[in-house]
Length: 176
Image (cartoon, rainbow, N blue to C red; front, side):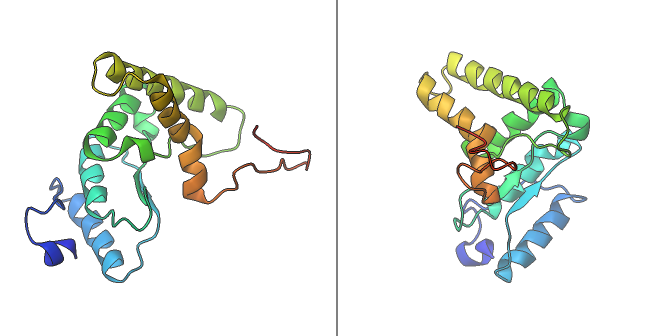
């Protein structure tokens, strides 16, 4: 749709990958043409697809809602320090890291908490390294705000959750 409207070399290019990229692009294009593109999170189980998926998602960000299309967090075979770091770098290189909705879980179990803590440490290590290398501003408040967005606020906004939900027991806010 954007290619037809703006022509070639207009910023809607993506990395070509026949088995995955062509099908994902065709699906997103169909949804876009029918004004039916929902919020989308794509998770790549193969780390080789992170850049492909990130560039495709960038081609369909229409500005209707910031972060409407998301490259999902490193998951399954990528749920380790190298996999998380690769996914963060792919997103930052090809998308907008500050809109990322962070780590997910497939359960509500207590054992999910270490996964989120591990993710936060990997994220802070990556952001801190970029600050140290001078690739992003050395502003702790700015970087810390982005980390807080990635670890909590972006997901809350993306999912349409209330700002300060009440505990299931009705005992007051869950977060303060």
